Length: 80
Length: 287
Image 1: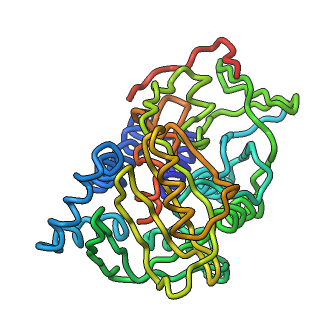
Image 2: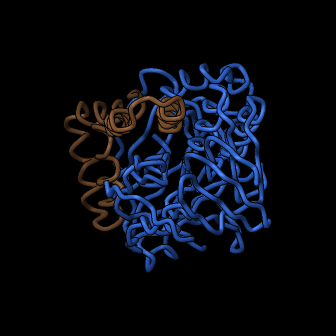
Image 3: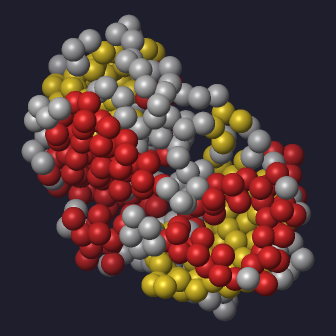
């Protein structure tokens, strides 16, 4: 949803004749920021399938130190 | 031929949101959607709390809160051997079926002035001074800017020769099943020998159940799910593949990609639960 809003903001600027290059640059930067720090879930999800014991080991490690899992979960559900 | 400032292909959350804000700003906006809403989709159904500010800016806060939903308090990670770790959310997360949320967003886009075409697929794109879009309904539209919001297998990206090669290493299945008694207000991410399962209540009676595995292992996960949730052998699943391909740059000259079409995050239960830059050819690109 947020990526759609960012695109709409950029599109409005382009249609109104604002500088194309800086508008696109600004959009790309904001878009990248949207996902920064949250892509670990991709790697975990992929590892969970391709090497299920790696994903499972992650859970074991988190039992000893849950802080890391809490931090990463917060990155997913509370960022933007 | 009808002329628009912006044409958006795909009416998922990213596409409808883009359309709504574009129309709200006074742009002539077209939204093309392959399906007839409401429809379900392979997704964890969870709504990131950070989306609430976007929904408020769309004037949808109250209407979203009125939808049937589950309020979730945390996520439980379960290892293959059954050991668990529970992480509580700082604030409750909600899960809403995509059929409800996506229809509301599409409706809002229409209320704000978006021209909507459901059951319509872009079949040909060509670009000279503006984009020309031909559809399977034999309509032609013209737009200054085109937005691909049509998911990881984006037709827009494919027609523009921007769709990266997929890796068919994983397959995802999703379904809504009866909510087990005492499931609790939590998401479950369960690692299994052949993949993993994501589970989340979406209302008082239904559970979103996702399975992800290698293609050769998906049968075993379906059998596990059938035992675990007492599903019939002919239980129907929605599916999506591929789950993996390289990202598409979100910003091109007069072409944007949003949501899964840019493919920054995997379409996966784990995600749901919780530039190559170039000018498109002016020759027609056919579906």
